[in-house]
Structure formats: structure tokens, C-alpha cells
Image (cartoon, rainbow, N blue to C red; front, side, top):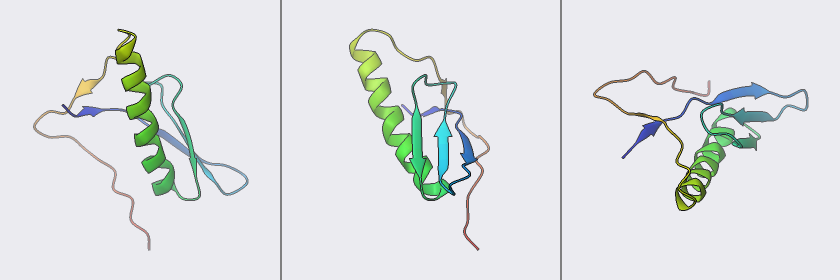
Length: 76
């Protein structure tokens, strides 16, 4: 089952990108590009959700419906 997690990405003064989420507490990922930060965030989210499921403390997320909007990042 796929679910939607809202991720906030911001560019740090050092030039790195930081990804966090209010939907998955504890999710913090950093990358050299926004895409890399999002890829790392996906892995961290999976691990956090697995750990919470083992403790019977599941994160309540929205399941993907028949359609949804997705901001696609494309390098120029």
C-alpha cells in the first residue's frame, strides 16, 4: 500500500538541501541536491514507519487515491 507523506525541502546556507516532514516525526534528510534529499527522505521514512509498526505505533498517513498532484523536479 502506497501512502502520501508531505515533505518540506529547504536550501541551507551551505548549499545543501534539508528535507523534513510533519507527517512522520523524526524524518530528517540532507542531500547535495533536492532530488538526493528526497531520495534519502524516502528511505528514512520507510525505516521510521517500519520501526513504529514494530512497536504498534503506526503513523496515520493518507493512502494514494486514483489521482494526486506531484511536483516533478527537473534539472535545466
